[in-house]
Image (cartoon, rainbow, N blue to C red; front, side):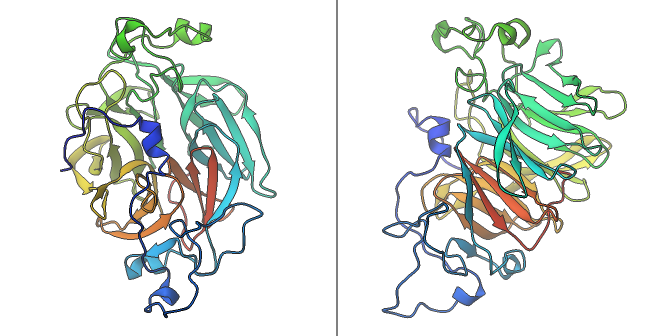
Length: 404
């Protein structure tokens, strides 16, 4: 278990953005880089070199294998593609989240939790346009087994599904007679059920709206929670409740808690194994209106039996070189490997990859922490990674397991 968090610490987004300067890290790249470095030969620029690696269309050509693709286990060499490098695909959002691939439309959907917009990234030319001009601070997204978009809205504190005729159907906005907190991430089970996490991370001025004065998620009761939010504050939740992980039944629409705050506090990212028999849930730090150090910042796994979670257990502790990394969004590939956004010190942040047994087998080193990721492209073999206001991509030698 990691040590308890200190009383004073940087804001959550400041930590997730990475860039906290610490000692450098150098590890092997792909198999061709496994041999001992030859002295006196120039080393390629990387995230941790001085000067550091440059990104974007005007950046110098990066040598291959990419020095920021790190193989920790031979199994990762079969997943990484030696002739592909990490790329900055787009930059221009506020805080990008919830990437979801639309197979029919051949585009990537993105949430901007700060600007309360959704964007569409086109596969053919990389053009980005506004998909939904006001998204109520949507965060996690997924296209279900019928191709319908499911979105988690911080602002309205609900989960909605957009039908094929363009109408909006509310899947969940309350539980036990109380409003939801700020639905965060969503995953579609092979049986068609919608699973989502409901911490309080969006109950803030920036990414949604605070509670009403006197409720837990309103600091000192002085936050003016109704500003610029007449619809949100009329229909959205006014007081956060305990954290949960929920399941929406595909036949009845019944909303049921499959994990409680006592079982797993501060749930964040969620994903399923390819066969849907295992659910992975991230347990993160405290949200608005909570006291104490929150969750353990580990990835947990549970067996899915009859729409319920059994045998909840630790899967990965997210420790890297003595640092407790902060996990966020994650996805599984067709072989059952778990790709997870890792946030923390520069040189360590980016993406970490675990095999189905919980062993870290590879890393993608980026200049920022990754909030969420998914597999996209016509073959579902391109990894899309959201990092602050930037979108990174990597061609991989595997495919995403989830519908989107």
